[in-house]
Image 1 (cartoon, rainbow, N blue to C red):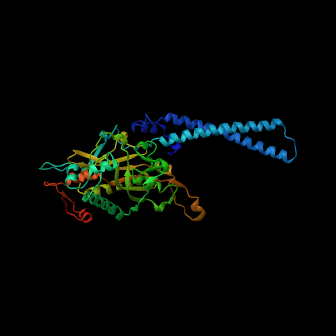
Image 2: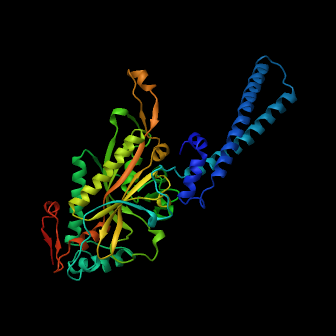
Image 3: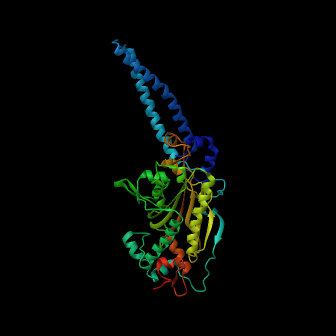
Length: 435
């Protein structure tokens, strides 16, 4: 959970974040403040009652030890104390559950650099790389190219898996694997620790990573096993660090994971139902970083994660642009987010392929991930050293098959052959993809 003390000290900051992020219809900050005040009041009333009950119990035991016959009024007083305390503790327990549920839904604040806006139409372009592809022939879309070259089986995929399902075949499957391996190798060489996290995760992991409660409609649930299919490797990578306390020298921690991901796309009914752009199952290489609770260091890491992704796109020779995501397009836990949008010439524009997010201590507090501030000595002194919650960040490295849309459309030649960029050739073993 976010720090309630920080919330109380910055009520108007949170009120502005709730409004600008578009959470006002889902979350009432005043309700949270009322529940907290009620819980505090109940705790203040309970404390003296507990003291009086304990005092009374001790007095009764002493009288019994001395053989004194206890007056009925004293017994009745004790029973009444117990009854009142039980009722008040139950009320406090209910109030605490309501309070914690509200804290779980509280959106994080934003950094001042986040532009105002309602949705992705208001995101602000920061820079571009590469020139959008211009064709001197009638370019084909990715569906036509994939079917012509035998890279995907859309009809068979739908028969097996229903709407938005697909199967990559032949060089299509090899191309996807080559792109992922290129990205994975680039990050591992930079010191990112490779991890293959669980795909099926508990509710605590989804809540801890911030994908629940608001994102629950997009998750596939395995109800019988009380598990969920993760929509990104980020969930597992971050949740694996739960309840850990790092030494300061261990930070920053750089992680990279590759997983199959699953999302219902519940909010996209009727959109992009054909092809590889918007699907229920996809593959992703994800970057996660854990740093000290220092905004300057967190922003430096945000830049690093972003540059990692742009270097991969440049190796793939795909034009892209970077946009600062506006307030209304931010998620619950994000304090700052830059999206990378890759150009898809036949589709007709730049489309999101990467999201680079800074979450502050939002995930760390939910998952209890801390680091120990430096202590001069060891042993007991080290154990008593002050602990702080870490900051977490994440960014896509590559996500397919969406990125394949850009790849096929950008690298097609007049005869429908796909040119393979030089840096990808050693991974795919081909200079061109042809029939």
